Length: 261
Image (cartoon, rainbow, N blue to C red):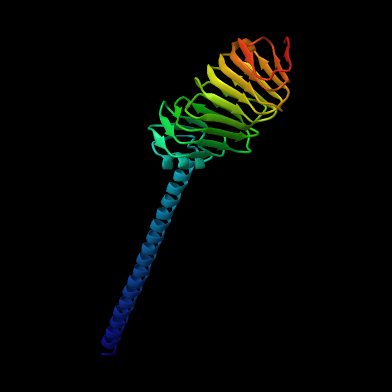
C-alpha cells in the first residue's frame, strides 16, 4: 500500500514539473517574439529616416550645381539673377519691365526684346556679357571693377558711368553711347551712331565706323585710335589726340594733335 502511494506522489510531482516547464518556455517564447518585433520596428524606422535624409541631400546637391537657366518672364529672370550659382541666363520670350543686375553674368537675350531699362550695378569683378537681342530703353553701366561686352541693340542710350579699365566692348549695331567713366577704355567693334565723351583719360579704339564722336568741354586726355573711321568729330576740348584725321571735324577746336602708335 505504501509503495502504491509513493508511486502516485511521484507521478503527480513529475506532472507538475512538466507544466511549470511548459509555462516558462511559453513566456520566454513570448518575450523573444516581442523583442524581435520591437527590433524589426526600430529597424524599419531607421531605414525610413535614412531614405529621407538621402533624398534631401540629393535635392540640395542638384540646386547647388545649376549654372544655367532659361526664363520667360520678369519674375523668372529676377529669380535667376538672385541665384549666384547661375552664370548664364537665356530668354525664351519677350519680357517687360525694368531690370537691375548686381553681379557678373552672361545674359543671353536670345534675339528677344526686353521692354524696359536695364541697370548693371556692382562693385564685384569679372565680366558681364549682354548677348544679341533688343533693349527698348536705356542701359546704365555702373561696374567699376567689371568689364562689359554688349551685343544688344539698344533703343535708348548706353550710359557708361563706371567701368573697369579692362574695358567696355561694343558689338551692338548703331547704338548711342555716352561715356561718363574716367580712366576707361572703350572698344568699338561694330558700327555706332553716336559716341559722346563726358570723362577724362579715355582711350577709344575703333574697329568700325562711328557716325559722330563728341567730346565736351572740360574733359582732357582723350585718345582715339583709327580716328579715320569717324564720319564727324565735334570737339569742345583741346586735349583730344587722334592717330589720323576724321572725315570731318567741327566745334570749338583749339588744337588737334596727331600721334603715331
